Length: 195
Image 1: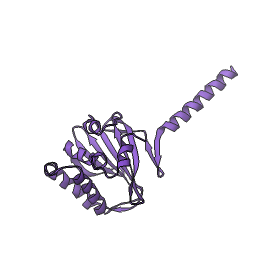
Image 2: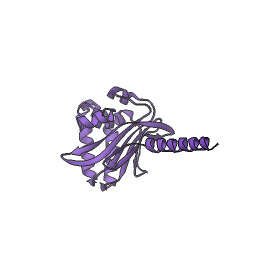
Image 3: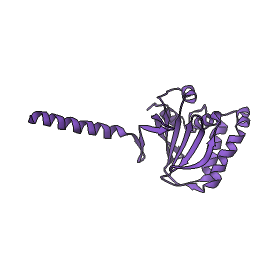
Image 4: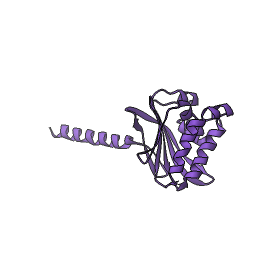
């Protein structure tokens, strides 16, 4: 009977270690990203993650969560269901500066006609930056696509923007990192699951 108890104990320990190990998929610059997230009652998987650098400074850790892993930009943009971009700040950044970076990324990855069609959601998104003076080190910003509702923006778990219902705008946000002129080519590859 003792050998069976020993085996059972060993299996329980191994099982516990396995689940502890898989609870966090990635750790970057001290930021732990879970291998899954739940958005709108849907389980999402961490597709990829990386660090955004500006010059030599680490600005934030970003993770992309999708219903299932995708390696091609077109597949990410066409993915049905919920999606999440999770951004954890690694330094303090003024809201105005952060907003300009967002809109610069959108501008580089859309044409004039697309930007004209996105004018209303861009104005709503811009208003969010006016309500927050800065993003501080450790702040977590979630940009969630919720089917049937739109893009929800949460700062440290608190809703900071009424949902933006335009799916094309959410994809324009994704193209900041995944577009033909991403903010960082290496970061694009990391978000698409390349190491």
